[in-house]
Image 1 (cartoon, rainbow, N blue to C red):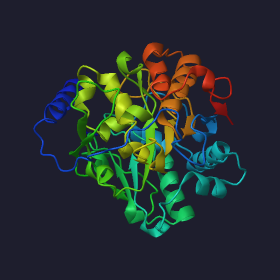
Image 2: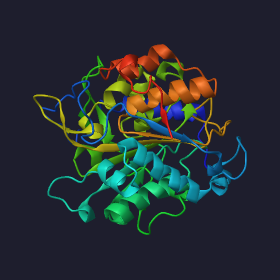
Image 3: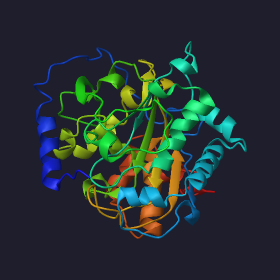
Length: 363
């Protein structure tokens, strides 16, 4: 598998950030709406509801330190698929998985499912990647249950996806599903709101999200460690440093930038300019694949095998709860709480607002 060193990663990110000022502007919304904290991001699912499941039957052997290829071999696909259906049902509180998926995924008005375009952001840096069973279940749900065409489904990592189709050949996808690698890269300038300050208010993003051609965005993240300035971990919020230019995340105001890009219309969806309300949700599902996990990162292999999956619709809430409950309480990898709490406060929430006593709803 092609590897990237920490030095190469930082160099690449720095160069990416430095080119923001000189890269030609392709598209820049003139009066982009700003999301208002606490407003709904999904009309059918509670912002604050996060569900999780631990099931050691999801893997067939205990090998915490192992390659992606070996992990893929050890995954019990049928069990994983059943558990993802259970998570969907628990998220919307219905016993019927088909009804649950039709509640979670919403097509745009005046479009048929066969015309809907879906983007799936995966994390492809270094050794740890989404396991095939997890990816295939989401894609098959979109195609088999809802009617999305496989060729309208695009799996991407616009920074580290350059070798994805070759070195992470997801097994079991519907024929015609597109593993897009970098998907053209991060080329299109767009606005980025506060709390990112002293930035000129703009950065670059994947073109397909800026120009509106993507209808539904699915965020499938891993459970890895990272710098303490990001809370000590990388999950669904930081996954979008492969959607937006990663360079500013390695400069002053790095955590502000991470918070800000996750409040943009490119991620959350088209917004009312007056109220900041999401008119049509784009990021309709966030899923953390923690079948394996690591205390450190973002590079290196896994060092733990939690056999855990978690799901929600609001990225910062999902990350906060997995960081504090799974990584902190269960695995002993205490997050930097000063940064981690900002994942709540910058989106308008406090710990007391979280349901279930501030815990993941385990099923």
